[in-house]
Image 1: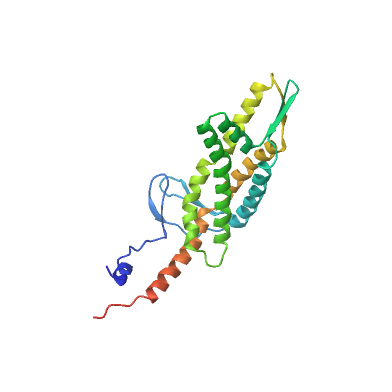
Image 2: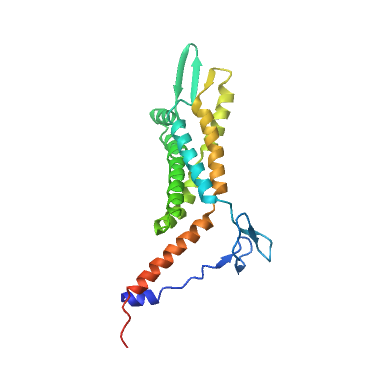
Length: 229
């Protein structure tokens, strides 16, 4: 298939059409003002909400989350004192101790869900927002936006925090537990990540990437040599 045929055979998507998440009614949405929302006329489900200054708010929260993440993984999270012996560890140190105790699977899960996935979640969000704030957002912003959902699913700092609190309650009768700075920082990080995700408006990013996609199509059309009759 020639390059010109590939261009003309490309399906034309009507990007103004949006389906309801609840009843799948296909409809066109009017332009939304900042802070406004649109609901489905059939089931009254909220289809889209335009958040105020979403990208800049998300960028500020993502930077705060990155700083908290670095601190949380640089200082001890817990200290234990048992029969005169003291020990403290970080999240990474805890995962390495599990590995040394031959609990390979648990160690890998802790390392991935408590360190790698949150780092990817914050890094992807920073790249997406910074890329979307450019005058001409590139297609890779959309690729990162698609994969960002997976990093958010696997990021389980709040689950780790609950596990640590339960463990502290159980061992409080046998040892003196000294909460480290990282424990409080991780608690703050859970709320910052939740605020970052709730304030992020992916539709605004998609709309900006749509402009770049049109520009690419237009440039491709300009470079296409039409077949002679």
